[in-house]
Length: 134
Image (cartoon, rainbow, N blue to C red):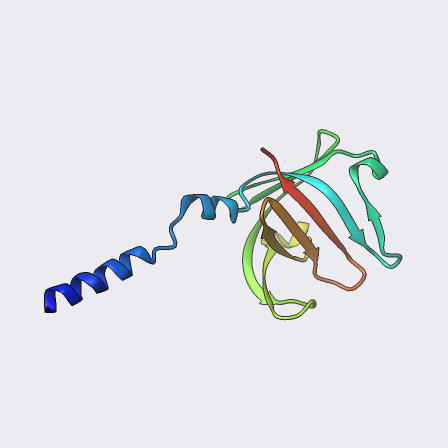
């Protein structure tokens, strides 16, 4: 009986692993993300690739962030991820520049499905949506 109980506990503990490679890959920032839209500012405007005549994508690799606008590298930064209090409420994971000279402030992020939501942590700032490149 004791062996059956230990076996049952072992099965439960090993089946509760969160190391699902497809889930962790989908929740990872690493890779290329294509810009869909940005909304915000004092006027609450919305920009898209069509309305701005720009093709924008970003790439994450480890702690490296690169942004390309119409094929030209426009930002090349390093960052760290910290969980901090958000102006939108609660604690959120944030991209924080680890280079004070090129500081871009804190940007909260959330990955929902194949979409990355980036929100600048300031009043009247912009939120942007990107879709994972296939």
